[in-house]
Amino acid sequence: MFAFVTIALFGALAQDPAPGGATARPQPTYELSLHENALVRGLEVTIGDLVDLAPTDAESMTIASLRFAAAPTPGFLRTVTRSELLQSLVASGYAAGTFRIRGATEVAVQSLVAAVSQVELIEHATTVLEAVLQKEGGDVEYELASPVRAHQVQPGRRSQEMRARIRGGATNPNTAVVEVEILVDEVVAKTVPIQFKLRRYHEIIKTNATVPAGMPIGPEYFTLSRERLDQTNGLYLTSMEQVVGKVARRNLQPNQLLMLSDVAEPALIRRGDLVTLIITKGRVKIETQAIANNDAVRGERVNVISTGTRASLTGIAEASGTVVIRN
Image (cartoon, rainbow, N blue to C red):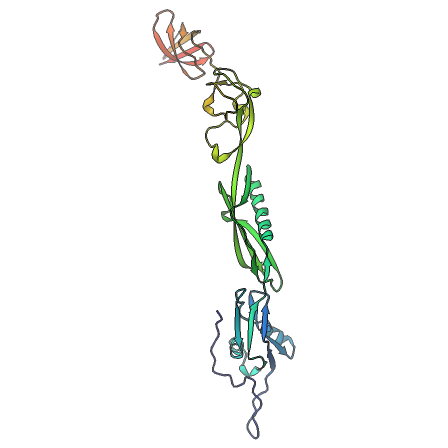
């Protein structure tokens, strides 16, 4: 909306000197020729957009650069009358009698527009998105979440440019919003949010052959498979180092994605093994022989039968062939 200061003095508007013996009014300093139509390039309407000023001097150039009002929204029209023009000049500190207004009785003001294409907007958005994704790291694919339309803004008196940034400074797990700002004469005229869908991937170990339970496993039985992160977010194994030296905890089928629960450390003690049983109580340490009743890896519980007393005891597998009971 245009806001103007209401004034009472309009007698100097296009007036000639008084006739006969009457005292003549001072001659206007500047003559303003009001246009019939005005196309505005920037975000503001200036006096110079509405009129031609004569004579041309430093002061008239200052007057021409005065802000009259905000430019109309692209696609809309605003009319400005002589009275509104004079009100604006008086509000800027000039005397009404300084000006003689000629030409049209009112001027139709519109904003000149230039189209910003979908291609331009998407290019700016994807450039910023790719830079952020590279900084964040990871294997990520993206696509537009919805169509992007062209926008119309003023071309600017000096410049029109774009800049973009990720909303919130970072991407979300499955989405990202890039805000593309269209600047007219270095002022943000419009902000266009562009939303992307993200698909994140990671590598998971997958079997390429049948692996029986208890079998020692190595890289020859597996390959790395690229999988959607949001579909495989459990305790999956993601590097070969996690399986080397392990054994299959259960039968593994070909093309099976490997989880932590599918592998185990090799058993230090197997059922039926003759083991050394070490029993400690305070400073007392007793070593004897026993028979293991179950397989166990390091740190697991193992039940044994003492060969001397036939007592059933439970200890911890500490090393190959060694079970420890601590009190």
